[in-house]
Length: 146
Image (cartoon, rainbow, N blue to C red; front, side, top):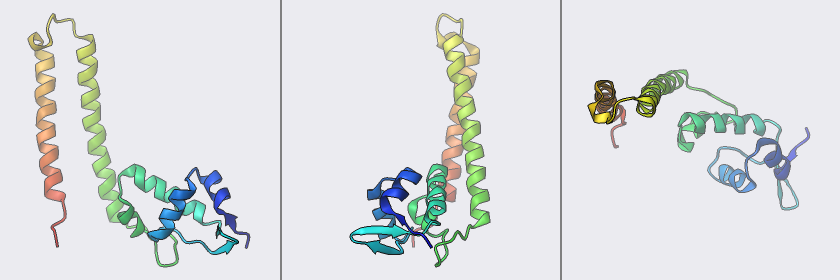
């Protein structure tokens, strides 16, 4: 098996060597060997790094991501957790679309003052309710302290 030098892993993955060392220190990835002082990684580390990047983009913490890898370093993905995260992203997309629509209305509204515009006032009220409801839902989903 041909191992990849830390510099090659960094170049191919776009992850800085310092981040690779950190990921190794917290157990997300493992070096298979060393060549002098340079870490050597198996080629599978590129898949692991892609999954780590995807997880971070989706809003998972590094601790949550670490729990998605089995003891052999291969993905052991919790489908139910992924469904929950996808649902949360869907809600965020809806909220962002509503915000986008409000901003576009503000930019294009012909009213002399936005406070005189019934559409603007309605959009702000809807956004405000969504914000309160979203915050309440997020609060309910927080895990209990142990």
